[in-house]
Amino acid sequence: MWAGVALGYHLASRLAYVVGIGVALTRQRHEQIFTRRHGVEAGFRRFRRIAAFLLNNDAVSFVILCLVTRNFQSSTLNIPIRIALGVLLVLLGIGIKYWAALRLGRGAYYWENFFIPRPIVVLDAPGPYRYLKNPMYTLGYLHAYGFALIWGSWLGLAAAAFDQIAILVFHLRVEKPHFELLTREAQEHYLERQR
Image (cartoon, rainbow, N blue to C red; front, side, top):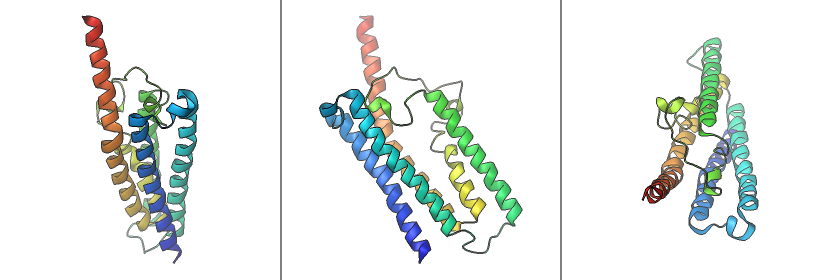
């Protein structure tokens, strides 16, 4: 019973994150729903509070799911190997995510460029973008699989896969079109200044 409750809570949390933040960012891009009434800085702070709650709730729900479903079925890996592999994946995932965040610069984590236009960061060397188009949401998700492995939560592994698919869809539907629009606008602005 508790496994079902934890799974439902986590799926609802992940959907609130990707759908809720996705809708909010899309509406901000098209209608300026946060900045029109509150101004740029206050509107961004308001959005960031909402996003932080959803992000933190999603992380907590995943941890709860893994803990409630730990050792849910007998493990095919012996415990020391499973834990060592899990710790390695957690360290790799967090390291790659951190490296990518450093390369993106200030404000990338809470989608600040939807609110406060900044110069476009060219995602090339040095950094993980030299090797991957989207290190944050690809190899940067290894930590979720690692955490589930540490606890022996096969339901957690399935949830990690669902979470990664959901965030990749979010990226394709929300972030990528916005970034392409910013890049196009920056190129047009540059060409106008060259004339």
